[in-house]
Length: 188
Image 1 (cartoon, rainbow, N blue to C red):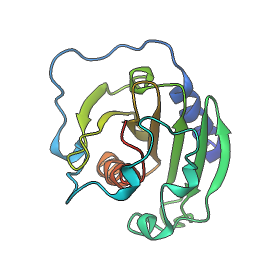
Image 2: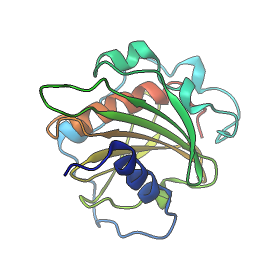
Image 3: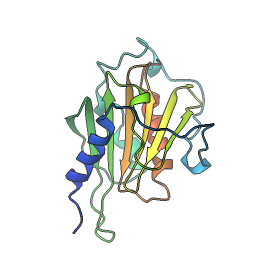
């Protein structure tokens, strides 16, 4: 019997809310090109101004627009909620009756947890940066979700999570969504 989407989403949020130390792979990041955040183009936008690392006033539902999500599916209106230690906004794709599933996009703002607190979801932690802003990112994934965590200063982050999407493109799409979010965050 398939798990209810809300349950699976809650498990992903719970895993990302844990701030205990997690193991990481040693050495240089070995991100395959399909899992590397897509390089941005041009200069950082004006959205990257303001107090460094200050995400306390960032509304997670303002970080992605319907037009930005349209590239990845037919997503409904956002739902704001509290997710563990973060503030979250979730978009659910209209159910694909042929495949019997729908993707979820979740953006979680953590005011008091940096990317060092991102747990390994099972496939290792990959460190990288977004080319257009230089922002540090951590990516981790499992068979359900891909998470791209954007550092906003040392002690805060924004996670972009794509769940229940095609396994072959899930992390690539999560990275592209993270670049959209990056443009709207203060540099930290």
